[in-house]
Image (tube, rainbow, N blue to C red; front, side, top):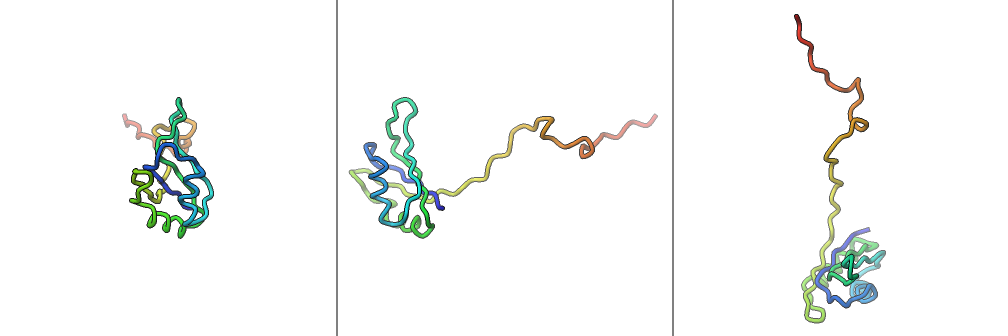
Length: 108
C-alpha cells in the first residue's frame, strides 16, 4: 500500500468527493480527512492509502498542481518515517547487570 497526501482542496469536500477525484487513477483503500478537534471542520488536507504504487504515481502526476473550485491541489506520495527513538531509558529497559560496563576500582 502506498500513502498519499492530498492538500488544498475546498473545505466542503467529503470523502466521497475525494474518492471521485482520485479514484480514476487507482483503487483507494482508505481515506482520512483531517478535521479540527473541536469544531470538526475540515482543515483542507487528507491522507489516502492506494492499493498499488502505480495508481498512486498516476494520481500524483495527474492531480498535483491542478485547480479545483479555485484552489490548487497538492498531491504527494508520503514517505514513511522511521519511528523515533525513545528519549529516556528506564531501568527496566536498560542493559542487564552482566551487560553493564563497570568502572574500574581504585587500587590502594
